[in-house]
Length: 423
Ligand SMILES: *[C@@H]1O[C@H](CO)[C@@H](O)[C@H](O)[C@H]1NC(C)=O
Ligand SMILES: *[C@@H]1O[C@H](CO)[C@@H](O)[C@H](O)[C@H]1NC(C)=O
Ligand SMILES: *[C@@H]1O[C@H](CO)[C@@H](O)[C@H](O)[C@H]1NC(C)=O
Ligand SMILES: [Zn+2]
Image (cartoon, rainbow, N blue to C red; front, side):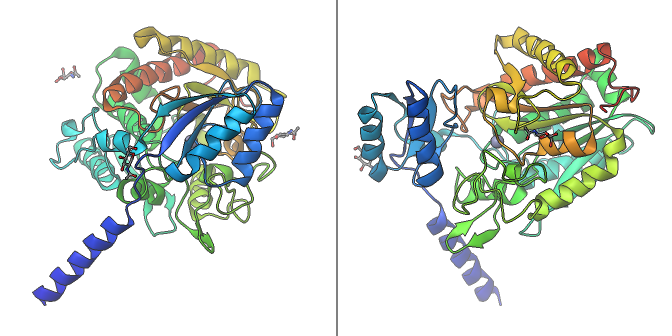
């Protein structure tokens, strides 16, 4: 009996090691298009050639596009850039090196204070920490389940509430698996709301119900720790040799209209239909259940240092767009105070790229939540998805400053009290 257990254990280890994808000598390039034609060349490459991993989008207005290439495909990319006279720079010459330097810590002590802000944590540790928050603050924090996943996991979260009848703020983290700073940011906001003595933070915690989900794509997040650091989608097999749907292109709002792919192998594959995925379907059902309470919805991604507003299909503003824009701009002013980090603010289609099927568009359009934003956190491309550990805390602090200011500004504009609804 014992012998058999040991045997199975060893096989599992060997299998996992074999499966771990390495990025030795993978290079990240910055390519600078000169004009619309260059953008088209790059955007064609993004749509048709899945050997390259586009870390940023080839869209009109992009100053540069960041692309990761495997050693065998580098020469071709360099030649393409040269052929079109596009400046090309190396941002990282060996992605595996950067991955190896990333620090993953363990949360084991069952003391909530031992969760640090100088390392990243795997899904189990985050979930254990959430359980310990519930145990530590039983009268304020409850465990909530936002949905479930293809591999049978739960989308775990917490609700912070000091009593009934309050309006709510929703925090959605980790829908794109490789954007590790996103769950770290959401965790920090929860931590501050529960432990800070700072007046504004205490008030924010007391005045609103907080629905907090650090990892809304748990299967993908686990995969980035155990197998493939650069994974973005969920983990459902969809076609021969193709796994995963981009959960932030799968929401039922202008699904597959623009900025999403119909190709299963693509990193922005929108899925076989709107809400085809259990993760988006169950999370959207959960959201419907609390829609009347929601005043502010925040989704966290990385990277680029942007604050995005709906919609992704059009630059035509919605009814309270100007309020939302002004509130967002002021909050990004507050974000910049601590470390000088400068976020741009604007509509998705206008400042980043037209893309539909994202969560914030659905939340805005279907649930009529007054204020809905998407953060693209640090940095601007130097480390991209591998934001160094010494930037986790500064990132988290400045974002916390901005979240408090979002609430402050929203109140000044007459929001957060349920008095005013988007038509
Ligand atoms: C990476 O490149 C270096 C320098 O060209 C080379 O020595 C090394 O063998 C390469 N590593 C792998 C795993 O390909
Ligand atoms: C907040 O106040 C409590 C009670 O006075 C104190 O025990 C705790 O250390 C303070 N926390 C911080 C972060 O200052
Ligand atoms: C964009 O999407 C919104 C929300 O679904 C819709 O109201 C609007 O008509 C769409 N605009 C265009 C140009 O497709
Ligand atoms: Zn993202």
